[in-house]
Image: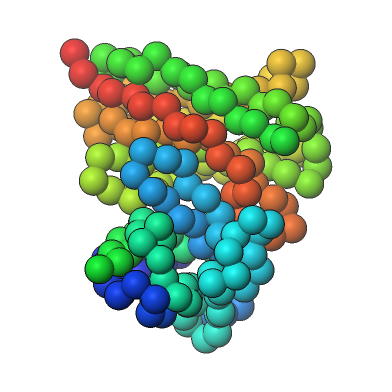
Length: 107
Length: 120
């Protein structure tokens, strides 16, 4: 079955750029989405189709995908961006795959 | 504005069946552009996809749960359901229902989540 790997945690200072990676075999050939998940809330889609932002998502969120790695980039990180982030892709063998999640700490 | 509201019993005994419903308002559950899924998060763990239901009637389940999972739809009530049989403590989790987008293969709208605890 297809698997996605994420770092368990990433730390960033306020105002700096945070990069969260997601690795999978030939991931660049698939669409990757990213979700923000704050404690006690439902996940929110922040990036889809590798680099597109849903309406209402701040411009500081961007995404890229090439080779075996997709990356979520948060520019000018704010305290409110502290959350867990999950990548998600689909594969012919598994319709939905989530990465293990990355805890973003803003300190 | 699409709204998904998931509901369930809260407490389920070991070996019994967990049943959850997701009521959809603000859009038709039969729309061919979308599919419907269940995702859960066990305490201290990440998101885990359980299964998805498509407008064609096809269902797909996570392989490790396939023998215990059924996802079904009631178009007259505009809701879909999850049944998970023979539950154990490992099935204790917050369960989310969500709408998936066919073209981009992501979940663009989520329910508020329903905590299901397996305990005697």
